[in-house]
Image (tube, rainbow, N blue to C red):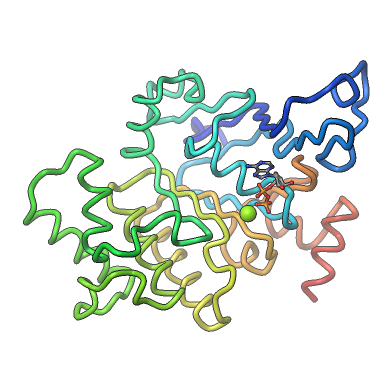
Length: 279
Ligand code: ADP
Ligand code: MG
């Protein structure tokens, strides 16, 4: 693809812990998977680089603990990176490493350019606010002030994700898991972000509910053309959604390519295991 990427990530590293001479020592690191048994440092993301293009859904698949959520949290500035770069096409022409921006600028990026859907709705929603209020919160963060407009927009968004009109004023704590994820999606979409981050959005939902949320994500992508990073431990979810896929293991990218290609001809032993377990 020739167009400028909407998001470019270069050599993102995130470690939890101090590191020591054994895990940073000359040449090869003495670590087990992503962990240094000597100083207990976790290398959650190791040299992650990729590009996300306009209108694309990029899947990130990997087992539990492979660093997927850490990557998403770094991109949404919930966590600070240890080092690395990220450039956003619609922010300063993609010329500024957003990880080096001030927290004020990072807040701007979160509010105007990114939408995030967390695996755990408690992280993304205020469970005691009305659903409309949850969306208004994000609209206010993005500079909206007109109450009537915000209420109308919130209703429109909730309708879009098929929350019944009669329940729009209800608090998310009264909703089922699938409905909570729908409200999170509506909230994430409220500021028309060019980039949507979705972390295990269907994990833990019943299969039928999972299917309806996946349909919703596909419909949003089709109608709004938003670029998305979709994270899941479940290759079946990734297969349904992603044009291209990255496979993570122990904090590293071990394989990437067109999703169809990865499904047909997985190269890495771990990816092969993932693909064969689908059948
Ligand atoms: P995934 O989302 O793929 O399951 P995570 O990104 O949640 O993986 O975790 C990656 C690794 O980072 C795991 O080994 C996890 O234990 C570790 N980790 C995540 N958060 C922290 C933290 N706050 N402190 C220490 N280690 C963490
Ligand atoms: Mg996770």
